[in-house]
Every structure is written in C-alpha cells, then in structure tokens.
Image (cartoon, rainbow, N blue to C red; front, side, top):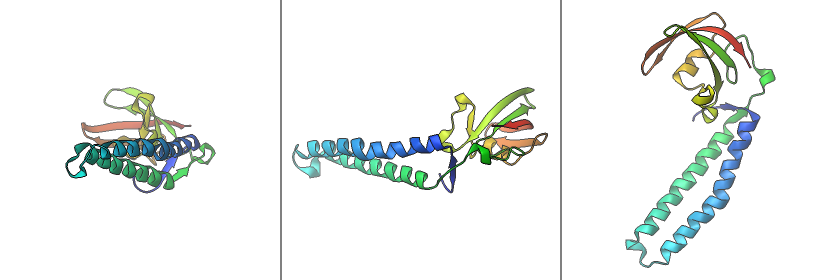
Length: 157
C-alpha cells in the first residue's frame, strides 16, 4: 500500500489490534522457538534455529508494514462523502453493458476489500475506473480479461 489509505473508523480499530497482537503474543512465540532451537546445540548447523530467526525477520517486517499502513490511514466519515460522484466508501450501482445486468459495488480501501460482500478496492482496476464518475456516465475499464463497459446508475452510502 502506498500513499494515504482511507478507511472507516471501525477498520482503523481492527488495523491497530493486529500489530499489538503480533508484538505481544507473536514475539513471545518466536522467542520461545529461538530459545528451543538454541538448546539443540551448535548454531552453525542448526536448521531449526535458522528457520526461527528467518520467521522472526518476516514477523518484524509484517509488524512494520502494518504500522506503516496505520500511519498512512485517514478516517473517512460518511457525512463527509460527496455523493455527486463516486468516491471511497460510496456504494455505486452500475449497469454492465456486456451482461445487461446491474451490480452494486461498495468502494473501500485495500484493507477492507471483500468481493463476496461486494466491497472492491479503490486501487483495483474497476475501483480506479469508477472513482470520480457521475450518475449517467458511461465508463470503459480495462481489466485482465478485457474491457468492461458500465453505466453509472446510482451513488449512495
């Protein structure tokens, strides 16, 4: 993730809980694994020790990544959202010209995206293509499988 990450207040709280968990329980578990591997003898030829130290490096990198995401997070309040155009945390109903069916997407941050719930990331090809568009606009979006053509039918919360 790069730049500012717009999230809801609830998502930010969830994001803050994960590094705390990793710093306490996660670090303690890795320290236990390192100590256990260290007890098994010569560290030069100890594969368990090497694996535990590598796991520690990955763990610390994940903590750093999460802390960076939290630092770049900005809370968006639904009352601040402009419904005259598609934006983060807005729900947009589009008509797919290929299938002739309407579908609704809820545009969210990468962290909140869940296609099964209709939540797509604003950094996804469809999310990027819909951002800033107004009701009635026809949008052509290039996706890995080809080009999709949508008409913006409605924008809501």
